[in-house]
Amino acid sequence: MGRPRVRKETTHSLVQRLNGRSTIDVYEAAKAIWERDDAATFWSVIHTLRRGERPMNRAAAAYALHLMHGNGAVPALEKSVGDKKEHPKVRGQAAESLAHNHRRKSHRILLQNLDDPSKDVRFWCAYSLSEMSDVDALIPLRKLAENDHRIVKGFWSVSKEAKASIRKIREQMRFKRGRHNHCIFCSGTRKKYV
Image (cartoon, rainbow, N blue to C red; front, side, top):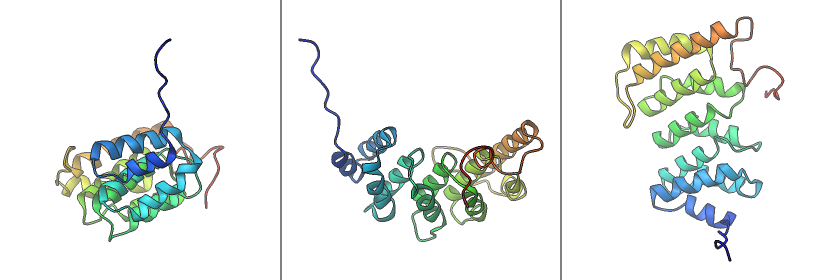
């Protein structure tokens, strides 16, 4: 007899849940999608990031892309971060996702958005640049650490995140003396992006 078999959710139903109305359900679908990293789902997630009905859906799509593999993931995330018309929560989530899945151009886009009007965008750009160990971010991060005391809901102030980012980048600098001034991901044997 044994236990009943649990049916795997179809790609179509996961994408429908990603575009749903319940925050919990939307993010559970996003998690299931990136765990699968299924090529059949990939372009549907990109479509939701670009044209999802609600900011919550677009932010969940950005979250799902943080570990998905596909040629369009990183450019779509970069575009969302740089889109000043997009909701700040979506832009912040896209910036956070770039910490784990990025290319050299991503560094520049994150650096450009460290002075964004949205505290969420500034916060997550600082976080991602620290994860990338981007030495070029140290000067703008110092400005944020000194002046930006706005608190991001559910976290802490932008200045506190900037200080933590500076510490992390300095630690990585000591660790990887002699390497280029960008992230570990962008150096070494991994595929180099233009």
